[in-house]
Length: 622
Ligand code: C2E
Ligand code: CA
Ligand code: CA
Image (cartoon, rainbow, N blue to C red; front, side, top):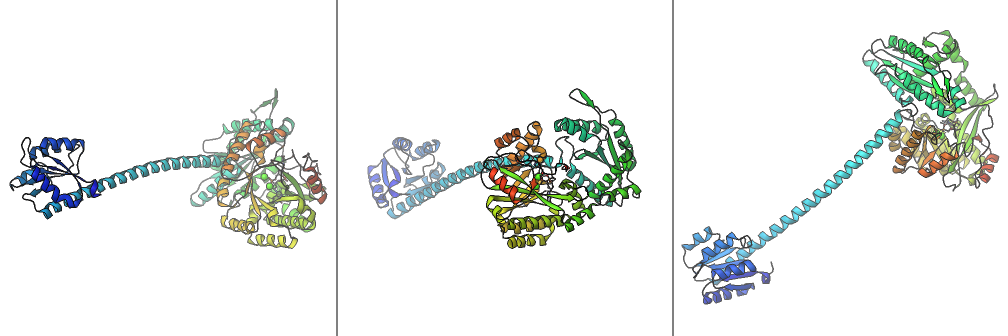
């Protein structure tokens, strides 16, 4: 407290006393005001409150005690410290009673007067500082509370958004969007759970595979819009016969499956299969005023102690379907281990042998498809696709047929190695093409990611053929096979360190897309063609694509849309800001040759549609 700012009011009816006190206090350099009566003192105190009052007790009019009482009663003056000035020791106690804080005895001892006054002013000063600090503290607490409340609500909003996104992704990942049934990955997971549970407690269970007999006919003659509608209606029709708790899924273009658990699961499953078949007799699909009927072949596979994986159950079911079909359509057949027809069937296409031969005899081919940048800018981006030459039929076989058995027979890593080595050798041989290409995408099975030697080999081949590593993008389909996350991470990091990029393929169909996207260093995401293909006629698919794109952009991932088949879809994807487009609308896959690349390079400035895949007889299986 600056001494000149301090105001002391001296109150005494004797001008002499006031003069003496004034002199005594002069060295303290405070401002002094005087009043010669209690009434005058109150007036001054109310209009210009002093910091301290020295108050005489005996005065004409209202005396010191009375004056002090008035000061105490008034909120504006209540806190001004009052020191009584008295010659009578008996007044001291009363002075404290009415609110005085100290007293100054007469006659004055200059040193004592100054000491008592300074002491009171010091107290006052500390008291005022404490009040200021308290006020500051309260203000800060108020500010922090407001900040916290704001941060809290922000956080809550983010948590809610995240949860909403996760739920949407979870739904996307586990459901089929045509029928709203569970999808194949969800079924896979459920079968694995049942198998695990069976090891602890005895639960009876069985698996039904329902394979439609004439779906392809409807789809091919009426188009995929009718096909989707048929599947949708059929799913509802079949679902109405099932029991609560049966796990109903769509597992392929024209395949459904039901997992039945509980006591008598296997007996119940057989009964259920027959009921489903009978119920199908009543199913009529009307399209364009014409009625269509479908039948199905149903395989019943009991889940026993010998069952150890989803793949095995699927294989048994597929084999059983093939055998059942030999006796015509609309059959129900229960899997039996030693059915001779099954062994024959298994041998009919011995994929393991075909693939081993193909690798040895050089029957694999590389085709490629252009991936178009949305703004048409930049160098060429292509995806390499594998084909298998079948010397017996003289046709190409598409990967939809041979990749799944290759995965089943553990030959997929060999196929991937073949593709990588051949592709890098091609690029090394045709160095001209390196100048045209901005990016080359190569599909890798998730199984291959588990092979630590593969990353080393790829880097060796890159060096051997002197191909810039940043040209390569590896497309990995998110499957349950990325089971070993750590191995996948190491693989990806090793190649990413050299500049290779990674794309998550078939986004939206897998089981844990979002999880993998967070855990693994993907640069790009490709939305599965199944959502893109018909988004111009199917509003639900359009909405799915829009929400996926929005979500992926939120995660800062550029998006590629595949299976773009017409201009309507191109326009929709443009509006959504999808970065790259791929599909028959722009380019149909064709054999990888320098000529083909050169032609595409020339056409790139004026995008034209390129002729279809050379072997028209070979149909993709999806
Ligand atoms: P993917 O990676 O999703 O490849 C896209 C598939 O969609 C290709 O089928 C392509 O020909 C087809 N496609 C492209 N544009 C359109 C379109 O506008 N409409 C329609 N309906 N289809 C279109 P493809 O070549 O039969 O390949 C099927 C799958 O096989 C690929 O799917 C990929 O997962 C796998 N695959 C292909 N090559 C390899 C390979 O070298 N290694 C591995 N591990 N997998 C491969
Ligand atoms: Ca791909
Ligand atoms: Ca894909």
